[in-house]
Amino acid sequence: MSIQIPRGTQDILPGEVEIWQHIEATAKEVCRQYNYHEIRTPIFEHTDLFQRGVGDTTDIVQKEMYTFEDRGGRSITLRPEGTAAVVRSYVEKKLYGQANQPTKLFYQGPMFRYERPQAGRMRQFVQFGVEALGSADPAIDAEVLALVMSIYAKLGLKNVKLVINSLGDKESRQAHRQALVDHFKPSIAEFCSDCQERLEKNPLRILDCKKDREHPLMGTAPSILDYLNEESQSYFTQVKAYLDALDIPYVVDPTLVRGLDYYYHTAFEVMIDGEGFGAITTICGGGRYTGLVEDIGGPSTPGIGFAFSIERVIMALKAQKVPLPVSTELDCYVVSLGEKAKAKAVELLYQLRAAGISSDKDYLDKKMKAQLKAADRLNARYTAILGDDELEKGLIVVKQMESGEQEEVELESFIQYMKQHTQGGN
Image (cartoon, rainbow, N blue to C red; front, side, top):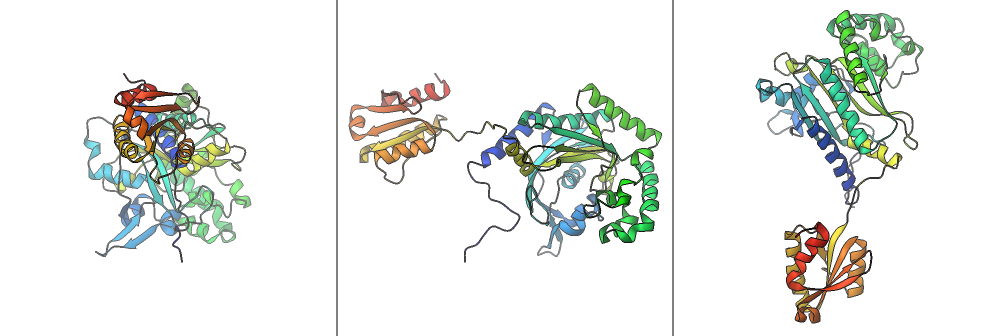
């Protein structure tokens, strides 16, 4: 019986991986322009980090984490998201003590959640995320929102919509929390078991329930915007004013809540509505958080961030048929005929690669016609043909595959010739 890939995971093969590389490179370049720097954290952490950092009332902690006991008896979890690990590193390495603040970081890598696999939702998926720690200025909220919208614009995505909301400060959330409890409690028995449990622990998350989204009480639930105190209202007004100044369109949705416990003030999602991509779908989420750094053992520090999965971005790009500058083109394919020519081809191939020229050759002892077909399948720009006769004369035939033109080149100047024609080298 053959061994197959685990459910909810995927192999990313040549021809597809180049799309991933393009998205990752684009996101990294935008982060560079915004002065964000990469951080890399472990794929697994102590379970307590996510229980404290993500929140023990969330679906992630309660239902979706890959948790196991290591040989030392420690509870270990494969990271289900990136923020908690970044904040743990921020605290442990005392990045809050560095001279340049706020600390502006980005990350990418695999995350793991045990949930039902479906299109755009895998058990192992790759997230790209940003965290800005150390500033309570509404301008940094606008910067983070501008950054993520710039990534999507640079990738060429259309019909991208920024949806924002304010969850208020602690005082505002407590007032809204009580209003939600009073609203849902008389009929809570009509809701799912998860919502019944959330009523006292975190009633805001009832609004995020997928099972009971059509319940009549959902549409009449108290809006957080009606419970914002003066400070929270002022903060949200400033964020919107910055977005207006940057000419970044947005929609305010008072029903927007985030699934993690640590969000305060600005919360947002980026949605896309594209033919072939289904209904309006979230491709990014994030927000401002308060208390997370303290929960993980650090000083009182505000932060804001977002994360998106590469898989969902690829789905959107394909649905919109966005042309991608992805090339698997080969600079040169060396065709050799005869034993001496084959030996020389190995040497030439090494020299081509050392000169920065992507190149390859036949290793299956194919005939010349088959070697030329291989060069064509590999999208080779040039084919260099060397036989024993050419070798004896100190020549090699170089063919430009697109035009079909070919010329004899002296072997001594072959590498330089290829540099000039593939790189414009001198």
